[in-house]
Length: 473
Image (spheres, helix red, strand yellow):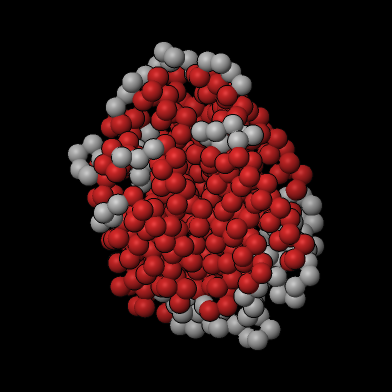
């Protein structure tokens, strides 16, 4: 139960929930905020393509790599405390990035931003669980939460295209700076501190597991990112991938030996939780694919301006918002599992429609229908998956659940883009390659929906079928 009784009513929880949701959206927004203005940054600092890759990766690598350890810190030291610490690091780094006098400083501050984000995101989930102690209320909150993250990514992409058409790219960092400042000013007054777990529920730090997981995920992710500009056999791709995979294998072995593992064996294998994490991973991968591919298509093939390209994604954002709002009552009525499966199938139809893309495809009739269906399906999948990923997780592991869920969401675009763009590279015509990538993604979504139908009917550790929440202390 929360230590402060003022957080027991749903009405009193609305404002703190809004603060947490805006922070979560901003953490994801920050990944995409420099995507469109990269050419301007390259011109200002005289950068190579490898330098630009480093700028892109500097935030995402520590963010995805440190999320598990961030979850452990939240479970050990209380959610609100780590939320404040992480957000302080994130906000200070955002100011420094905006004022960066050189490429080296910009990359360093993006890295520090990622570290702060990795501490903040799991802590926000831990605070959220304290804010909504009843399983039904928490499930409803998570259904809303699921649509927040993907919206942050899309808004970041659109905003970077719109704002940098008129002002310097440095102003993009004003958003994370202001959000961090406002959230820090209101944290003590609005957010519950939560109870510090007893000696039996407060986990150890597991430093060996933290180092192995962080390095394994970060190196593997870097190799996948580098595959966009280099062949898979290149040292810059194969080396980090091989080392990262080896470290993750060692991590899995170590976690079976330590008394208090960072990621307990079997935590992700619970059928409904696995379904939620799979849905989160694929929904993020699909959103990342369409943002990346259509951005290239509209600007490089159709010669659209960055501003026009950003405007093309406005209907996508509107559909995300509408579908996210509709997802909450749908989860309550039909259950998170059915909403997740339905979302995957709707998104698969959207991706299938985009398979017809050609060099002169009309935006309104040839691209927009698939874009809208993908947005609607993605929002449903995100909402249902967020609920499944955190269902029946005890309070003392809520930071862990938040770390695992955010890791799945962060790895989705990285892994998905690397694999799907490899599919696209098989075709000699670039647009035909884009169509192949959309087709492959649609097929994966259908297979995932069928797998989810099987998984959600398997009995969980609690003995229940159908992913129904039980009261977990």
